[in-house]
Length: 63
Image (cartoon, rainbow, N blue to C red):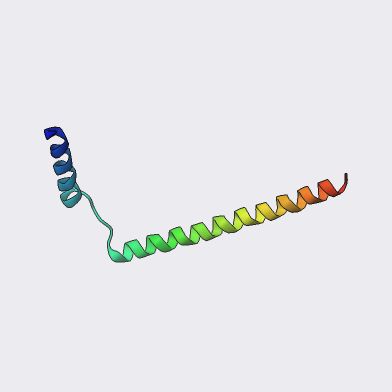
């Protein structure tokens, strides 16, 4: 049990003293980049889905 408490204590100290946390402005900028990338990737997947669906409907209509 002492190993667990030592681990938790050391982890807490590391989070307080050794980790460099981003500033509020950096956090907002990173969030906007992630949201923008998510929207772009979502749009690309949607376009590929519509194209594949249309292609398959055309191929199935031939038979």
